[in-house]
Image (cartoon, rainbow, N blue to C red; front, side, top):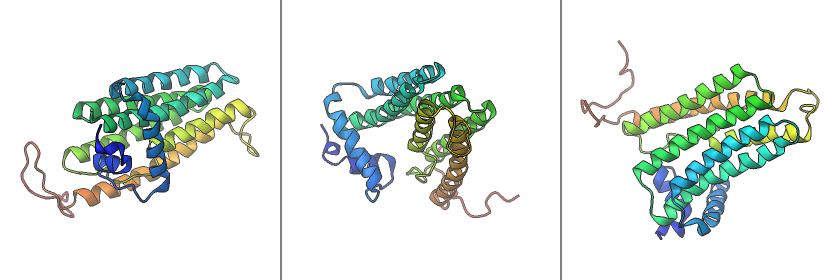
Length: 240
C-alpha cells in the first residue's frame, strides 16, 4: 500500500503532472474510484484495463441489438468509464504504477474510444461523422503523447474533449435512444446524430486548448532526446 491511498488526488496529480486539487468534480471522482478500488487491490491493473475494453465492446453489441437494448449499452458505457478509473486507482493504491502499465492503459483507452464511436454508429450516427471524430481523437492523443515524449512533463491541458466528455456524450445517446426513440425534443433528430455533432464540436475546441497548452509547455525547453541538438524551441523557430 502506498501513500497515494490516503491522498488519491495528490497521487493522480503527481502521476499526470497536473494539479487537479482545485476541481471539485475531479476530486470527487478520484475519491469515488479509489473507494471502489479498495476491494480490488489484488486484481492486476492491466486486467482492469482489458476488462474496460471488453465491456466497451459489449456496449457496441447491446446498442446494435436495437430498441431498449440501448439502455443496457448505457450501463456498459458507464461501466467502461468506471473501469477506466479503477485501473489507475488500483495501480496507485498498490504501488504498481509502471511504464508498461501506462502503455497498456493508453492502448486500452484508444480501443475503448473506438468502441464508443461504434456505439454511435450503430445507433444511427453518420459513418463519416464517426470517421472524422475518430481521426480527431487519435490526433488529440497522439499530439499529447508526442509532446510528452520530447519533454512535456504535464498533460498540456485538461480540455473539454477528454474521455469523460466522450463517455457522457455516448451515454446520453444510449439513454435517449432507449427512452425516447422518436428523437430529440423539438427537432426530432436522432440522439446518436446530435451526440456525434456535440462530440465533434468538443473535439475541435479541445484540440485548440491542447495545442495552446503544448506550445506553452515546450516553448523554451531544450530537446534532450535522441538526435538532440540541445537547442530550445523559440518563437518563429520553424520559419524558413
